[in-house]
Length: 429
Image (cartoon, rainbow, N blue to C red; front, side):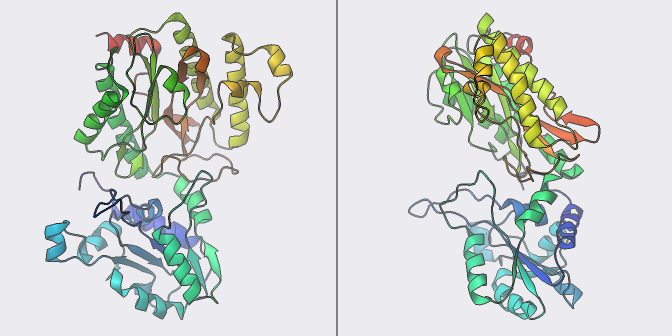
């Protein structure tokens, strides 16, 4: 295994927390992701379903978890189904988990082969009064393919139409958003790897390099430190490209006098990091570039202090908008008249800062969490204000990941260079 696995005790606790939120008589099922095909006999790299990872730590396809806390036989209260391995599979694909390995890594006592799922489920549903099925109601999800969870859910609803169905996702949104110390350690490892990649790039950037060469430098450092690569498709945009929020082509030459926006983060053990830094191609910011950079940095630091237990995210984002409004006035990008005449639904600052400032992060880059409930200690958020000025071919965004504590926050990326002076010094060593 490329990464250090988390202890089985974590997954025991996670499953117990989920089971404790279920209604009496409920039986819950969770499915791993499919391996998705490309064309001919090609496939995409396997990426485990985040809920399966959170509940079991099993990073393997064809895995199913059954939770039935009220089962008569204690052995039936947790059952993990894994793909049966063989010598042939071991030769062609690599060995899969044995039952003994699955038991040790997950803390689930009852391990069965996936081929036993149908008969075991049918037997246990005779005792159950309802089904818990999972789905993906993430507000930003755009799904055009049928997942294994979708496919299995449809089959279960058709075969057992008289069972009331409850949704697992609302429970998981609350539980997964609160990170355990073990998860924080894994996320910190991802942030440390991201730092190494960024410091490597600082010594590489110069006029004439391409955005994809910078991407390659990050990937090299990430892989050599145990990451499987980027936690999300990296954004590396120089000049005007930095003003395209989801620019992922990374195909252009970086020219003298431009600023490169790099939104990248390593994954580690399926946990994500999410960092954005902006650096001058020539090694020195112009006076205007530095002014915009420092304005974004001031908003970032003030925003971090606003993310505290009990705060509502909607109120927080409004406060950040007020901070950004003052900075944009100071930069001469908007006027007091613009503010007086603004549409409350789309304030004047949105012309140059049109996205949100923070999102949950964890097993998913845009992780699950309840946006209409107060922030709590244990949540981890990005903080990523930005100013985008297409007419000046300048886009600045700065982003760190922070852990909310009872009395403030811990910046998981505090050790990654951020100040403009520090960036310049490292580039010109």
